[in-house]
Amino acid sequence: QSALTQPASVSGSPGQSITISCTGTSSDVGSYNLVSWYQQHPGKAPKLMIYEVSKRPSGVSNRFSGSKSGNTASLTISGLQAEDEADYYCCSYAGGFGVFGGGTKLTVL
Amino acid sequence: QVQLVESGGGVVQPGRSLRLSCAASGFTFSSYGMHWVRQAPGKGLEWVAVIWYDGSNKYYADSVKGRFTISRDNSKNTLYLQMNSLRAEDTAVYYCARDAADYGDYLIYAFDIWGQGTMVTVSS
Image (cartoon, rainbow over all chains, first blue to last red; front, side):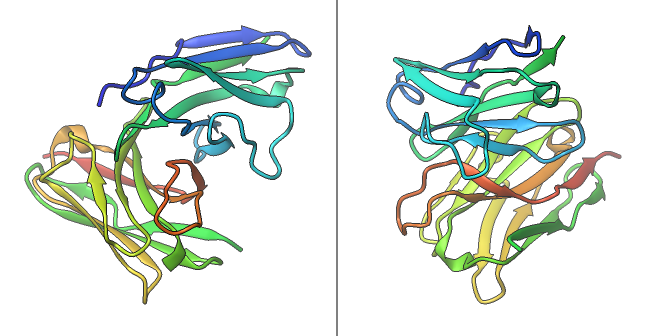
């Protein structure tokens, strides 16, 4: 049950696009299309942004998109806005268990 | 509205026990798998445990296996986490979260509803 690997930080200017990677193994990300992404603002509970690799829950902006290739999943945010500044976490099913990434702090410059 | 409310957190000495509760409302609790997720101060999210909608299956993170027990009472719309032999490294905000799948036996390990969290501090 090793944590998935995410970059510690990413940054972008308003209007730009950024991508956050989430690297696992053939025992988690690589074997299941059950990757989800969460946005967390300071002091708040996480919010589901993407599930099953690329599906968006109702109410989540279409500026958020997800994809997967092999053992690596990715979250792309297009048209960056100030309110997107937050921590982002990926999570994968791992055969009965769940495993999160270490989190990525997104800074909107 | 759809809501999860945790309770039961507090300060506890190492080696002691604590039971967390999570009261659900606004949805058919008995149709959903439920998870516990924790977050140590200043750290990332850690998945802790899952229980199927009917309690038939349970899984735990290696870090808590043998010490924590997840359970549910569908008649009371309540999820529980019994935490025994607590350690300093169990100090965290504990969130209960609903699995986003509502189709019986299949859980997708995506957490669409979260509680506000309850703080557990293990310290002498």
